[in-house]
Length: 496
Ligand code: ARG
Image (cartoon, rainbow, N blue to C red):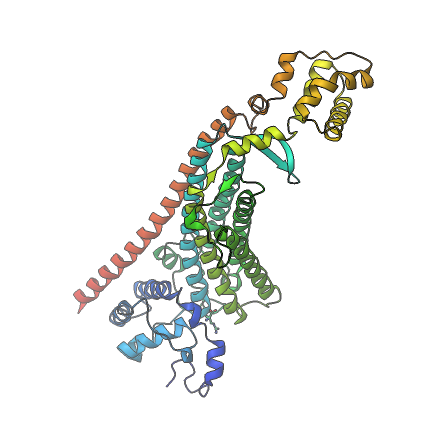
């Protein structure tokens, strides 16, 4: 007899079983569901709700379940498959107590949170490895000058370190966001049962602690209905993937013949089956594509939730795989990107050539006129604009136009002669000097970027410690659960 349907319903048709079962993605939950069953049973025994001997029978049966247990769709999900195994193992008199004072509704919400918290910590750890690689690459390129872009047009000189550190900082916030979400994920719904708790005098806090949670999702209706924690984490991942995708896109762009700023490592590129000269940045391309999949998961999850009446509906079951898919995509993307970035070759000569051939010192020239010529910024902006236009129409470099035409244009516009020394002009025209004087907080001067880099290493260390602390506390809870079960078994044995 089906332990769930009993004599209430006749057998589920096999097409309906296949259609409604969650066993496909429940593999993620098996070990957590086993732990939840153990912790809950331990609590029931300690509270005197379940007889010690019967409880021990259940615990022993739970211990025998392998983490890759086969599951039948007829039993709907991991929860019923586990209960069926226990009943099969120790009989209904004992195993029939397994689901006392709990429901699949609180159990699934709890299991999802347990798996998700591990994913969060692993993703945050991987992200921190990536941050380390970026910081190292920054240190290599503190004085590698390049054009900074706006609208993909040469804007002002910066350094490669300054550019890379911008990505680091985005990932630093991604890590912070994930750890912030962790606080809302690591709360226990157990004890909410189906939606309204139970008349048995259970101890929700005890189960929460045994499972390594930091507290409860208190309101039992909220505990079984809420999936905002899940949407929140997918949002975090969507943002993280967006940052990774932008970085990937730049690497794709930079490795084109037109830019020739970066060369992808062979190990992370492919070639063409027909065009032997090709070196395609396929890893970076796929990160862009997979980012879209995470967006899809986010939208799917929000749409599933938006019109669900409280509390549990089976629609929630279809939401869950979206988080696992997003976590797996993000984790593998970060890892492969990190390995690739370690080996990307940046072409320093080409970067300098680009910045020298462009007109990105124009802003500094404008500012210099304000300082030396004592004219308003807007007037100076107009003068340099005219100079640029003349240089372009006469096919001159900006350097050449400064030497040949700047004095004339200043006189035309202000009626005064030029009062900027050759030495000052020489510095203005040098992109390296442009960068050196940008010592303002957050600017590209090598000293300032070095200062920022050093500070980022400290933040990274703190972030790593926080993740480690969380991992250790989960491990501690796991060990405690095992020990508590052992000692309760001994107490039971002694009472015989
Ligand atoms: N398989 C379900 C899920 O993933 C577990 C909860 C089922 N609850 C129920 N009342 N049918 O959400």
